[in-house]
Length: 389
Image 1 (cartoon, helix red, strand yellow):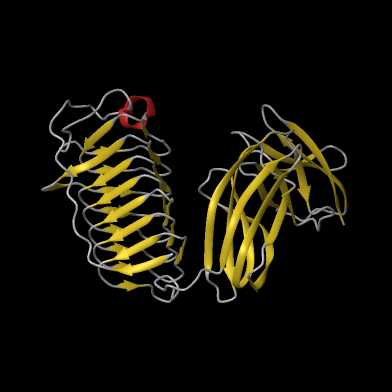
Image 2: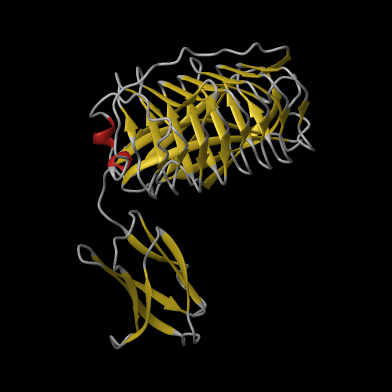
């Protein structure tokens, strides 16, 4: 990715006029209601989203509102051919996002005020974003701008620690760009900065040098009992290793494999990894590269569907009697439990099952012998035998 320092001229959109009003109560939490009618002059009406809703502005619809505040775990989607405008010239309005928000923009988002991020925003842009004010991304913010995506920020851009900026399209910043320690910049697009660029100890963020890895492709194939991920590089520079990450929701990723790189090379190298315990349903995979200097680059996310029988197991086996970890390949429903029985069938411990894997700590060490772990929910029951040494 190339950084250029230039003067960015302001771009003002024409005012779109007046239209009907809308009662926001409930409507903005329901994706279907967003497509009910085009909305005009609602600049005086502010909108707050509930937690864990994913409203969608559908193709062909255009909305103008006042301040917009997301709840927690929202994904605001603007489809291609759709638009959302906050405020107008002379009447700026702001977008404020809260914990774990996602903006997926293939249409157009215009903010006449500021974008303020309270915690962990994922920003996926293949359309157009225009922000007339400033951007304060907070810590751990992620921005991905696709090859056809454009982002125009007329004010300053401030990112906290661990800002991740992946640009294959174009980003223009009229003011200054400032990010905190641990931030990374990647991609083959262009970032133009009218002011200064400051990256703390992340010296490579504002640099213009080549990226450590040129990725040819990143793909996956779901098989009967496993998922195979494969990719290839055209070149590598001072490159240490890949880390393959997986997620069930596309937001929270965890590493599942570490694959050694090839240092510095101009030859093609092919890589693969077999996920022998994929999750039932949707699996998101993300590839991260790390060079010998600690520079980190994230590549695109791929999505694969996997269908199989539900699996329940415990580890390690044998165990020391102090703890035991259960593993399943599906997200447990409400009121799911793991019950531990001794060899006589007497229940001796019970744990709530709320995640794909969890370490169960026993209040009293188990004596040596044979035990049984039973996963119990309304639609799935499975028993696994284990040994305490």
